[in-house]
Image (cartoon, rainbow, N blue to C red; front, side, top):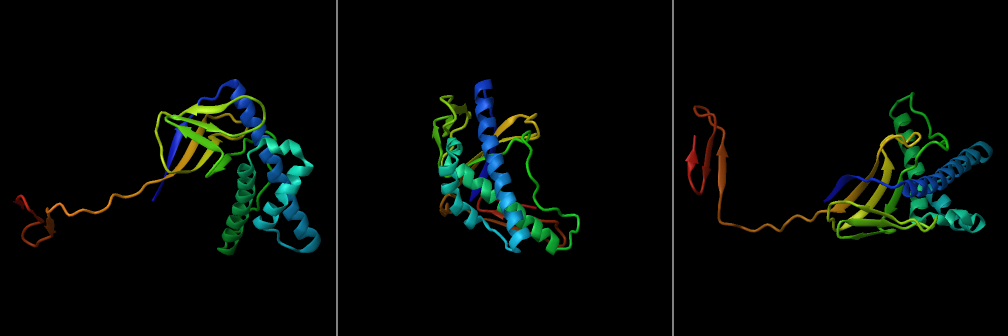
Length: 207
């Protein structure tokens, strides 16, 4: 079973600047990928999917080395987000929602969610640190919570337009249920006619 924990963080001014730099690179990749899909449909009547765009990402980074400051899986998650937005749009239209609109370009005032999936972060006790190459500013935050079996961590702003809100982490982690053991106790509940309910346990019965 997977659970999600929302944790508020308090980045310094230097850390906020790094977050915005990473966001800006992700925003540009999102917009370029969106333009690629629109142009392919307009000029070739051809749909472009996530796999095709993800395969182009290494070459894009070689030609545009400034994007290497973003951890690789974070950029991949941007393409997955765009793909999910398109799938949601098509599903809504298929179900008859004529108000549904396709994904839009993001402005430079929009803070993009930074998704670290399975790697690119390190948790040590109640501290989490994220990988980046913008500068030497460390993206590490106290989380006041020891978490294990973490699968994904997102850094987001709860009011993304101009980043006017607070910064949070969304942490997805696995929880493994405890194995069943027979403790020798039992309970039974019977909804009756003359009595509303009768409860019986190994210890006593109640009416």
